[in-house]
Image 1 (cartoon, rainbow, N blue to C red):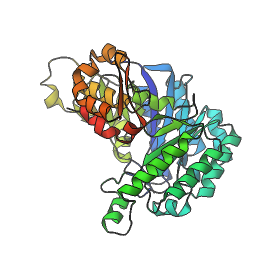
Image 2 (cartoon, rainbow, N blue to C red):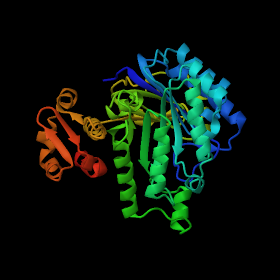
Image 3 (tube, rainbow, N blue to C red):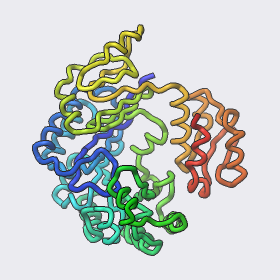
Image 4 (cartoon, rainbow, N blue to C red):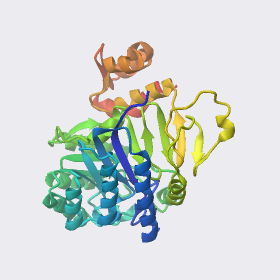
Length: 412
């Protein structure tokens, strides 16, 4: 069943400089004319797809680095969202930013546009660590960005931090966290570095040019972050996220609660409660497809369409008339009921609140413990999981460390 979108994600695939560990759909050095074309086509996509969005739906501008766009370009995008009824008194409107791409004037303009939450890619407050992975900002610039954001009127500010960076120690990580908490931030996201295949960092590590922390140090870094943040006003509410109570990311909670969201832009993903929509990754392919797109018409779920061309041979084998909205700049992926259940379970278990077992039954007619209890009991016995019959299933602090092993139980 298709549902009204409860969140809206807008992707900006541009960066000042590509970080060495990044495998996101983001590109550096494409030039002002490409950015202008992209903004024009993004606004066109908004006009084509701005429908079925709830009043109060969260807004999240991510990337890449959305703040590499000019204030005028960001204003055009927000205006298009408002005109098409996509931006409708959002419960939360977040802008991601690199500390090296903002100043007071831009931050004030973002507040005037209606953004009430800022998410800064700080990653570290150690200049050597930042330089090693190709970040464009310094520790001083990151702290100044937070100060300027507060001056501009942002009271809800997140900082991303990465553990496991080359050269990082428990002491340097604790220094980063201490200084960030001291600024009065309301939210911290602490992620472990993932060495993605094909990234420049992966190649440097393979060549022996860069060395990452070993397994023992990784464990020490993780424990350092957890133990330090336990002593602050920030409370852990998801595997990688901490917030002052009441300041959790409402947009990200939509993902973890498996609610429908609309994705706009190159590489953006949408989920309408039934199907998933995956946009083409490159800027050129996205722009070409959006420019060729006509007024939306039904297409067959599960059939790939690119640049406005439908796979008619495959569609001819389907007798029923589809009801999935047209998606000519990407791929429509129809999910089986088992896919929905699996994603709901492992996403929900990422949160410290855990799975609401009554809701799992209401949404999927699944008694989680009857279906998976035999395998999950091992983790209960190990102190990684707590089962409250008929109420909820949640990870302990120990389980949050090894969550991926538990999530595998749900994957057939």
